[in-house]
Image (cartoon, rainbow, N blue to C red; front, side):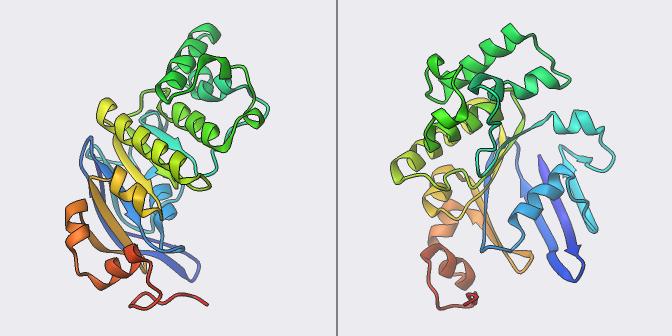
Length: 248
């Protein structure tokens, strides 16, 4: 579904991506891991076309993203943002239905509200939260609302940016389970960015590790657990000593 071929991206003298090669199969879940500043978020933004790659090719379902109709292209994606990114001035159902009310999908208020409530139920929230505002919900509930919004338009591809950041271990487990269920049940193609190794093991079909702007390791969860790659081993075990030098 998604292919990155020798993708490069620099910001002035800062060479962030230095030849990224990634393949994500349709209806599979890829988790991208790596230290801060290794290019994980830039990779996603390049796929979405928010950043234009300096070199290389990005294909979505076989089509070069630079030649795709922009509105039709973006309509294929859903996104769960790291901080939730809910609109404070909108009710919960309006947040979930935001895309349905304003995009080419354009639903009536009544229809959009019904879809929003259905998606809230899908992520374990009762209809009585629909008319609340984000500030009235806990962090875990806000994250679920963000997940409901991500799936509201039935996208083919969903990006999850640090889905468990700021959550306690129990709620992190709940969110991980929901993400895995949604990937399997909806058949979506998923890319997740995370530092949380419990999330990696719960969500991923395959894992790719970025280091110094390149994929230094990729494979299945089983491969990851058995790998003796020094970069991967240091990262997943959280060791200070190893080939990855921590900035002090």
